[in-house]
Length: 296
Image (cartoon, rainbow, N blue to C red):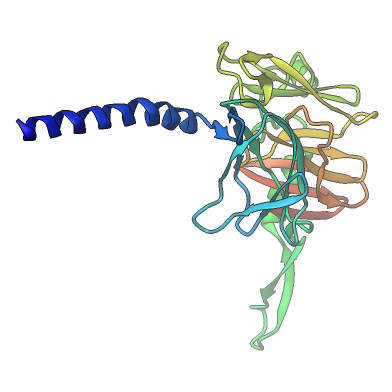
């Protein structure tokens, strides 16, 4: 009888603990925190794709750093509101964006930062070659076939192999980069209207990339920025999601596709009047006779 009573009491205690603690566990899992006067709903920010060794700042205060096994950082228990998120690393451009946090929701911060000085592999016009006409170990120069091959792509106005475009005729090729014939990357397309640059989605509804969505509301196009005057060239930066490359006046730069008033361009090359081509997933910059492959 005593044993049965003990079991019954133990059952009642565990049941009461479950009733009391269970909801607390659920609330904590949802991001709710106790602030002394009650539970406060919170959210978080998921900082994605930061380079190793990056420092993450929230409202100018160091919050966390990325490492070899942790390039993505989840910042939890943030009160609803707007936060200044910065990602910094020595030798790299800084990344800054205002992120809105709502209760029980994790907002994404997709980070894209390049080195302050991007590595460029120059492709020379001439290369050294052994002089087989003499018995001595002298050398002479000859034309660099790689230089000639890459250069031919720049001069071939009908060559569209370097870009996925919605253009099939010689007439439409002349309109590449317009809204009628945007430059494509899968189902994403970019085009220019004067100095204004736009991005659009040409795939199925409800499959839009994140930068075209605000919560559950998504758009099929977005204004990116205004360069005032017409850019020389546009393209999607290979290997990076939601990033384009632009040739404009005396520079070639990369910029994220996002509605971010604090967004800054990230310089790839600065010279006199550069242009670029994307060939087999690699970016090549030409400025006069200078030719180089971009390594990022």
